[in-house]
Image 1 (cartoon, rainbow, N blue to C red):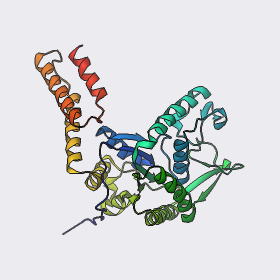
Image 2 (image 1 turned 180 degrees about the vertical axis):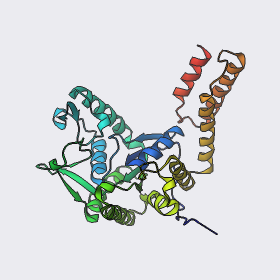
Image 3 (image 1 turned 180 degrees about the horizontal axis):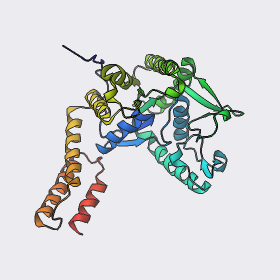
Image 4 (image 1 turned 30 degrees about the vertical axis):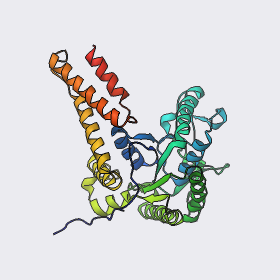
Length: 329
Protein backbone atom coordinates (compact mmCIF):
# COMPACT_ATOMS: atom_id res chain seq x y z
CA UNK A 1 0.00 0.00 0.00
CA UNK A 2 1.10 3.54 -0.76
CA UNK A 3 0.51 5.89 2.18
CA UNK A 4 1.73 9.00 0.37
CA UNK A 5 0.38 11.15 -2.45
CA UNK A 6 3.41 11.88 -4.61
CA UNK A 7 3.59 15.31 -6.19
CA UNK A 8 4.51 15.27 -9.84
CA UNK A 9 7.75 17.22 -10.11
CA UNK A 10 8.38 18.77 -13.56
CA UNK A 11 10.91 17.02 -15.78
CA UNK A 12 13.07 18.16 -18.66
CA UNK A 13 13.81 21.55 -17.11
CA UNK A 14 17.11 23.36 -17.79
CA UNK A 15 19.91 22.32 -15.46
CA UNK A 16 21.35 24.42 -12.67
CA UNK A 17 25.15 24.14 -12.60
CA UNK A 18 28.01 25.43 -10.48
CA UNK A 19 29.23 27.55 -13.38
CA UNK A 20 26.18 29.84 -13.57
CA UNK A 21 25.42 32.79 -11.32
CA UNK A 22 22.21 32.40 -9.29
CA UNK A 23 20.14 35.04 -7.47
CA UNK A 24 17.57 33.89 -4.92
CA UNK A 25 15.01 36.30 -3.49
CA UNK A 26 11.86 36.09 -1.44
CA UNK A 27 10.50 34.04 1.42
CA UNK A 28 11.94 31.13 3.41
CA UNK A 29 12.38 28.70 0.51
CA UNK A 30 14.87 31.17 -0.96
CA UNK A 31 16.75 31.22 2.34
CA UNK A 32 16.68 27.43 2.82
CA UNK A 33 17.66 26.50 -0.73
CA UNK A 34 20.12 29.39 -0.84
CA UNK A 35 21.94 28.00 2.19
CA UNK A 36 22.11 24.53 0.62
CA UNK A 37 23.40 25.97 -2.67
CA UNK A 38 25.98 28.12 -0.85
CA UNK A 39 27.29 25.17 1.16
CA UNK A 40 27.53 23.16 -2.06
CA UNK A 41 29.73 25.91 -3.61
CA UNK A 42 27.28 27.22 -6.20
CA UNK A 43 27.74 30.86 -7.24
CA UNK A 44 24.80 32.35 -5.39
CA UNK A 45 23.51 35.62 -4.00
CA UNK A 46 20.74 35.15 -1.46
CA UNK A 47 18.25 37.89 -0.54
CA UNK A 48 20.27 41.11 -0.94
CA UNK A 49 17.37 42.93 0.77
CA UNK A 50 16.75 40.25 3.40
CA UNK A 51 13.65 38.06 3.43
CA UNK A 52 10.83 39.43 1.27
CA UNK A 53 7.29 38.09 1.34
CA UNK A 54 5.08 39.71 -1.29
CA UNK A 55 5.52 39.91 -5.08
CA UNK A 56 5.62 43.73 -5.15
CA UNK A 57 8.54 43.92 -2.74
CA UNK A 58 10.45 41.26 -4.67
CA UNK A 59 9.83 43.11 -7.92
CA UNK A 60 10.83 46.50 -6.50
CA UNK A 61 14.03 45.00 -5.08
CA UNK A 62 14.89 43.45 -8.44
CA UNK A 63 14.37 46.76 -10.23
CA UNK A 64 16.61 48.56 -7.73
CA UNK A 65 19.32 45.91 -8.19
CA UNK A 66 19.09 46.27 -11.98
CA UNK A 67 19.41 50.05 -11.74
CA UNK A 68 22.16 49.91 -9.13
CA UNK A 69 20.25 52.25 -6.84
CA UNK A 70 22.21 53.98 -4.10
CA UNK A 71 20.24 54.54 -0.90
CA UNK A 72 20.43 57.97 0.71
CA UNK A 73 19.25 59.57 3.94
CA UNK A 74 15.78 60.32 2.52
CA UNK A 75 15.18 56.60 1.95
CA UNK A 76 15.38 55.87 5.68
CA UNK A 77 13.34 56.68 8.76
CA UNK A 78 14.01 56.39 12.47
CA UNK A 79 11.77 54.35 14.75
CA UNK A 80 12.54 53.31 18.33
CA UNK A 81 16.14 54.53 18.12
CA UNK A 82 16.96 52.59 14.96
CA UNK A 83 17.20 53.66 11.34
CA UNK A 84 15.21 51.51 8.96
CA UNK A 85 14.50 51.10 5.26
CA UNK A 86 10.91 50.16 4.38
CA UNK A 87 12.38 47.96 1.60
CA UNK A 88 14.76 45.98 3.82
CA UNK A 89 14.69 43.35 6.51
CA UNK A 90 15.49 44.47 10.07
CA UNK A 91 18.95 42.89 9.84
CA UNK A 92 20.00 45.95 7.80
CA UNK A 93 18.82 48.43 10.47
CA UNK A 94 21.29 50.15 12.77
CA UNK A 95 21.47 52.86 15.38
CA UNK A 96 22.93 55.42 12.92
CA UNK A 97 22.02 56.49 9.41
CA UNK A 98 25.57 55.97 8.25
CA UNK A 99 25.74 52.34 9.36
CA UNK A 100 22.31 51.51 7.93
CA UNK A 101 23.21 53.06 4.56
CA UNK A 102 26.52 51.23 4.58
CA UNK A 103 24.80 47.90 5.27
CA UNK A 104 22.29 48.48 2.47
CA UNK A 105 24.51 49.95 -0.25
CA UNK A 106 27.40 47.51 0.06
CA UNK A 107 25.00 44.60 -0.29
CA UNK A 108 23.02 46.21 -3.12
CA UNK A 109 26.07 47.09 -5.18
CA UNK A 110 27.41 43.56 -4.86
CA UNK A 111 24.15 42.24 -6.27
CA UNK A 112 24.15 44.86 -9.05
CA UNK A 113 27.66 43.95 -10.23
CA UNK A 114 26.69 40.30 -10.76
CA UNK A 115 23.27 40.93 -12.35
CA UNK A 116 24.57 40.75 -15.93
CA UNK A 117 26.09 37.30 -15.29
CA UNK A 118 22.88 35.77 -13.99
CA UNK A 119 21.83 32.41 -15.35
CA UNK A 120 19.01 31.78 -12.87
CA UNK A 121 16.74 34.02 -10.79
CA UNK A 122 14.81 32.01 -8.18
CA UNK A 123 11.86 33.90 -6.66
CA UNK A 124 9.76 32.64 -3.76
CA UNK A 125 6.46 34.34 -2.96
CA UNK A 126 5.07 34.01 0.56
CA UNK A 127 1.87 36.05 0.47
CA UNK A 128 -0.18 38.14 -1.94
CA UNK A 129 -1.10 40.56 0.86
CA UNK A 130 0.76 43.85 0.95
CA UNK A 131 1.00 46.60 3.54
CA UNK A 132 0.92 50.05 1.98
CA UNK A 133 1.97 53.17 3.82
CA UNK A 134 -0.90 55.55 4.39
CA UNK A 135 -0.25 58.78 2.55
CA UNK A 136 2.29 57.45 0.07
CA UNK A 137 0.61 54.17 -0.95
CA UNK A 138 4.06 52.53 -1.09
CA UNK A 139 4.04 48.78 -0.49
CA UNK A 140 6.61 48.06 2.21
CA UNK A 141 8.72 44.96 2.61
CA UNK A 142 8.89 45.25 6.37
CA UNK A 143 6.82 47.26 8.84
CA UNK A 144 9.61 47.15 11.44
CA UNK A 145 6.99 46.69 14.19
CA UNK A 146 5.29 50.01 13.54
CA UNK A 147 1.58 50.16 14.43
CA UNK A 148 -0.67 48.49 11.86
CA UNK A 149 -2.73 51.68 11.82
CA UNK A 150 0.11 53.26 9.79
CA UNK A 151 -0.67 50.95 6.86
CA UNK A 152 -3.44 49.78 4.59
CA UNK A 153 -3.45 46.02 4.07
CA UNK A 154 -4.84 44.61 0.83
CA UNK A 155 -4.74 41.53 -1.36
CA UNK A 156 -3.00 41.94 -4.71
CA UNK A 157 -4.93 40.71 -7.72
CA UNK A 158 -3.66 38.15 -10.19
CA UNK A 159 -3.79 40.76 -12.95
CA UNK A 160 -1.69 43.23 -10.95
CA UNK A 161 1.06 40.70 -10.34
CA UNK A 162 1.05 39.43 -13.93
CA UNK A 163 1.12 42.93 -15.38
CA UNK A 164 4.09 44.07 -13.27
CA UNK A 165 6.10 40.90 -13.81
CA UNK A 166 5.36 40.81 -17.53
CA UNK A 167 7.12 44.15 -17.88
CA UNK A 168 10.03 43.09 -15.67
CA UNK A 169 10.59 39.71 -17.33
CA UNK A 170 10.39 41.26 -20.79
CA UNK A 171 13.07 43.78 -19.82
CA UNK A 172 15.36 41.28 -18.08
CA UNK A 173 15.24 38.64 -20.83
CA UNK A 174 15.86 41.30 -23.50
CA UNK A 175 19.09 42.17 -21.71
CA UNK A 176 19.98 38.56 -20.99
CA UNK A 177 18.42 36.03 -23.41
CA UNK A 178 20.00 33.15 -21.46
CA UNK A 179 18.27 34.09 -18.22
CA UNK A 180 15.90 31.59 -16.62
CA UNK A 181 13.41 32.51 -13.89
CA UNK A 182 12.18 29.92 -11.40
CA UNK A 183 9.14 30.71 -9.27
CA UNK A 184 8.15 28.90 -6.08
CA UNK A 185 5.47 29.51 -3.47
CA UNK A 186 6.30 29.22 0.22
CA UNK A 187 4.43 26.41 2.01
CA UNK A 188 4.38 28.44 5.23
CA UNK A 189 0.86 29.47 6.19
CA UNK A 190 0.45 33.15 7.09
CA UNK A 191 -2.04 32.58 9.88
CA UNK A 192 -2.22 36.28 10.74
CA UNK A 193 -4.17 36.59 7.49
CA UNK A 194 -6.58 33.91 8.72
CA UNK A 195 -6.57 30.42 7.24
CA UNK A 196 -9.17 31.15 4.56
CA UNK A 197 -7.46 34.41 3.59
CA UNK A 198 -4.15 32.55 3.48
CA UNK A 199 -5.63 30.09 0.98
CA UNK A 200 -6.90 32.97 -1.17
CA UNK A 201 -3.45 34.52 -1.01
CA UNK A 202 -1.64 31.32 -2.05
CA UNK A 203 -4.16 30.74 -4.85
CA UNK A 204 -3.52 34.26 -6.14
CA UNK A 205 0.21 33.61 -6.24
CA UNK A 206 -0.19 30.24 -7.97
CA UNK A 207 -2.52 31.67 -10.61
CA UNK A 208 -0.21 34.61 -11.30
CA UNK A 209 2.80 32.32 -11.74
CA UNK A 210 0.75 30.03 -14.01
CA UNK A 211 -0.12 32.98 -16.28
CA UNK A 212 3.54 34.06 -16.40
CA UNK A 213 4.58 30.53 -17.36
CA UNK A 214 2.10 30.62 -20.23
CA UNK A 215 3.40 34.00 -21.42
CA UNK A 216 7.10 33.11 -21.12
CA UNK A 217 7.42 29.33 -21.62
CA UNK A 218 11.10 29.59 -22.58
CA UNK A 219 12.10 31.69 -19.58
CA UNK A 220 9.71 31.00 -16.68
CA UNK A 221 9.55 27.76 -14.69
CA UNK A 222 7.86 26.56 -11.49
CA UNK A 223 9.03 24.27 -8.69
CA UNK A 224 6.21 22.84 -6.51
CA UNK A 225 7.65 23.30 -3.02
CA UNK A 226 4.20 24.40 -1.80
CA UNK A 227 2.54 21.23 -3.11
CA UNK A 228 5.29 18.91 -1.87
CA UNK A 229 4.94 20.06 1.72
CA UNK A 230 1.14 20.36 1.81
CA UNK A 231 0.17 17.36 -0.31
CA UNK A 232 3.07 14.92 -0.28
CA UNK A 233 4.35 15.30 3.27
CA UNK A 234 1.02 16.44 4.73
CA UNK A 235 1.78 15.74 8.39
CA UNK A 236 2.65 17.92 11.37
CA UNK A 237 5.74 15.80 12.05
CA UNK A 238 7.29 17.56 9.06
CA UNK A 239 6.86 20.97 10.72
CA UNK A 240 8.86 22.86 13.33
CA UNK A 241 7.50 23.45 16.83
CA UNK A 242 5.38 26.41 15.69
CA UNK A 243 3.48 24.04 13.33
CA UNK A 244 3.96 26.56 10.52
CA UNK A 245 7.57 26.43 9.36
CA UNK A 246 9.02 23.28 7.76
CA UNK A 247 11.30 21.17 9.93
CA UNK A 248 14.96 20.54 9.08
CA UNK A 249 13.92 17.11 7.77
CA UNK A 250 11.44 18.77 5.40
CA UNK A 251 14.08 21.21 4.17
CA UNK A 252 16.39 18.28 3.41
CA UNK A 253 13.59 16.50 1.55
CA UNK A 254 12.85 19.63 -0.51
CA UNK A 255 16.56 19.92 -1.29
CA UNK A 256 16.56 16.31 -2.48
CA UNK A 257 13.54 16.98 -4.73
CA UNK A 258 15.16 20.18 -6.00
CA UNK A 259 18.43 18.35 -6.69
CA UNK A 260 16.72 15.56 -8.61
CA UNK A 261 14.88 18.14 -10.71
CA UNK A 262 17.72 20.50 -11.63
CA UNK A 263 21.09 18.79 -11.11
CA UNK A 264 22.91 16.57 -13.58
CA UNK A 265 24.91 13.52 -12.48
CA UNK A 266 28.11 15.57 -12.79
CA UNK A 267 26.71 18.35 -10.60
CA UNK A 268 25.68 15.83 -7.93
CA UNK A 269 29.17 14.35 -8.01
CA UNK A 270 30.68 17.80 -7.42
CA UNK A 271 28.32 18.32 -4.48
CA UNK A 272 29.41 14.98 -2.98
CA UNK A 273 33.11 15.89 -3.21
CA UNK A 274 32.44 19.36 -1.75
CA UNK A 275 30.53 17.78 1.14
CA UNK A 276 33.42 15.36 1.80
CA UNK A 277 35.90 18.24 1.90
CA UNK A 278 33.74 20.23 4.34
CA UNK A 279 33.21 17.20 6.56
CA UNK A 280 36.96 16.50 6.60
CA UNK A 281 37.66 20.10 7.63
CA UNK A 282 35.03 19.89 10.38
CA UNK A 283 36.91 16.94 11.88
CA UNK A 284 38.45 17.86 15.25
CA UNK A 285 41.72 15.97 15.80
CA UNK A 286 42.93 14.76 19.18
CA UNK A 287 46.49 15.73 18.21
CA UNK A 288 46.40 18.72 15.81
CA UNK A 289 50.19 18.97 15.75
CA UNK A 290 50.79 15.37 14.80
CA UNK A 291 52.39 14.31 11.54
CA UNK A 292 49.33 12.19 10.73
CA UNK A 293 47.02 15.23 10.97
CA UNK A 294 49.39 17.28 8.82
CA UNK A 295 49.19 14.58 6.14
CA UNK A 296 45.41 14.57 6.52
CA UNK A 297 45.29 18.35 5.87
CA UNK A 298 47.61 17.92 2.91
CA UNK A 299 45.19 15.42 1.40
CA UNK A 300 42.35 17.95 1.80
CA UNK A 301 44.39 20.62 0.00
CA UNK A 302 45.19 18.16 -2.77
CA UNK A 303 41.51 17.25 -3.12
CA UNK A 304 40.59 20.97 -3.37
CA UNK A 305 43.29 21.63 -5.97
CA UNK A 306 42.17 18.70 -8.10
CA UNK A 307 38.55 19.87 -7.99
CA UNK A 308 39.53 23.49 -8.75
CA UNK A 309 41.67 22.31 -11.62
CA UNK A 310 38.60 20.85 -13.25
CA UNK A 311 36.11 23.45 -12.06
CA UNK A 312 38.00 26.76 -11.49
CA UNK A 313 34.82 28.68 -10.64
CA UNK A 314 34.39 26.80 -7.34
CA UNK A 315 35.38 29.11 -4.47
CA UNK A 316 37.44 27.31 -1.82
CA UNK A 317 39.27 30.40 -0.58
CA UNK A 318 38.07 30.02 3.04
CA UNK A 319 38.86 26.31 3.12
CA UNK A 320 42.35 26.85 1.71
CA UNK A 321 43.05 29.57 4.27
CA UNK A 322 41.85 27.32 7.09
CA UNK A 323 44.15 24.53 5.90
CA UNK A 324 47.05 26.98 5.69
CA UNK A 325 46.49 28.16 9.28
CA UNK A 326 46.27 24.60 10.58
CA UNK A 327 49.35 23.52 8.65
CA UNK A 328 51.32 26.53 9.96
CA UNK A 329 49.94 27.23 13.46
